[in-house]
Amino acid sequence: MKRVIFNQKGGVGKSTIAVNLAAIAAHQGKRTLLIDIDPQCNSSRYLLGPAAAEMAPTLGAYFEQMLTFNLFPKSDSEFLHPSPFDNLSVMLSHPELGDLQSKLEARHKIYKLRDTLNELAGQFDEIFVDTPPAYNFFTQSALIAADRCLIPFDCDDFSRQALYTLIGNVAEIKADHNPALEIEGIVVNQFQPRALLPQRMVEQLTEEGLPVLESKLSSSIRIRESHERNMPMIHLDPRHKLSQEFVALYAQLSTPA
Image (cartoon, rainbow, N blue to C red; front, side, top):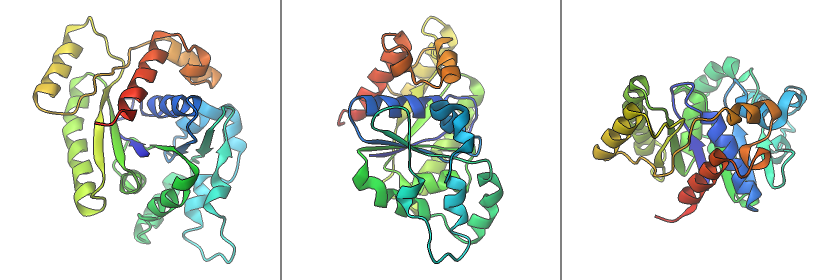
């Protein structure tokens, strides 16, 4: 399964969800790959800490070699790095991705990531792609390459307005480039079940027929500790409520419809 985590609004927990779902898949014995295609490198740092900045090759080199003739290009497998956790590999982001974007667009390289993921699919049971908070070349490449799109959502009006645009963008990619692409669901993040506004907003989205997932993720200070210690929740505190919510979310995604 190739799954992209996408929301063009920042601050909705995209990287946190991508890393924790990938960690759970790996913890359950799945051969798992996390691809960090966001120039902010949040997923890379989450898993590997400061060491991520010193590791090579990164996706910066991966995309850069598409722009130059090279008699001996690196193979796709050379961009895979082991994480500290069993069964979990990562393709690292790099800040230079932002500088490469316009050049890649001009050279029409938007299908290259799809080819790479198809090549790597035999090595992995699960592939998760963390994307930038923008609808740009990298996000479009990821959506073209993926089977499923998971949309993080926090319960405020700005997120709701952005949600409709986002769904339209995914539909456009599906129509023009990737007919197999499906929106897997909207995952409500930092949910406060006792607060009236989040409850009402989730009810409204559901009434509109949007695919809001039953599994929701609570707000917790523990996730900040998870970031600081570079340990996904399943490894930091597997009995914590939020860890169990991530497990329930992964179980829901893994259950055939």
